[in-house]
Length: 264
Picture 1 (tube, rainbow, N blue to C red):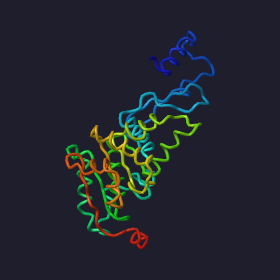
Picture 2 (picture 1 turned 90 degrees about the vertical axis):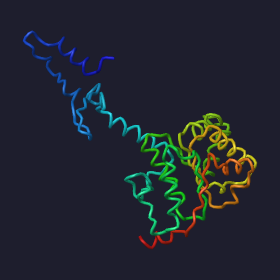
Picture 3 (picture 1 turned 120 degrees about the vertical axis):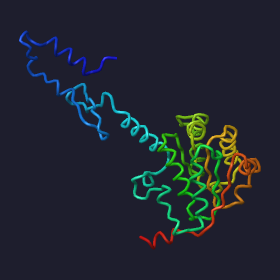
């Protein structure tokens, strides 16, 4: 397809006088410019009218990559507070073992989970506040940096989102929502498993999601505060304890949140 800049140059050529002067009042620079992008590449800009914003005609590879990554972060469910460059980045580098030395093994296993040969499922079990969710978010950020589709859910919020599809005025049906929220992402993080209401409907929906990802060997990370919550549904428990596909990591240590307040 011919670019806008080429069309404008052709129009200008047609409307020039025999002496080569352009049509009075027409300035091509008002519609086409060049700039240097943050990665040092020359990028052509264009716009259709003087009142429209400038658009890049052919962004460089790195600029396109950054834009894709930005959209993936926006759709991930990871709050921007925890993104790299955020106020409190939830990265592996920012995990402070000095606050909780007993989390050294879970930290190492979480980092190993990001390698290709790792089992597709990782379950982090332990008392609240010892850093499980930080590790889960660090895994999510690692995959986002690789341009993977990631979705992080607090389990009760996930179930509420599914339940909303049954409302009469809902614009999306249950199957669409299940596909977007649970089936399509390369990595799904289910945070606070076991904190949901123990109803047959909730348990059945969770089983559908987890079984689908289990059958397809899709990357899934689960955090849970109470080990007994893993055994409430025998079907889910059987999958979570499958040593071929799932690594169950017991996270020991103390609640570091009071220490974090002391540091501040």
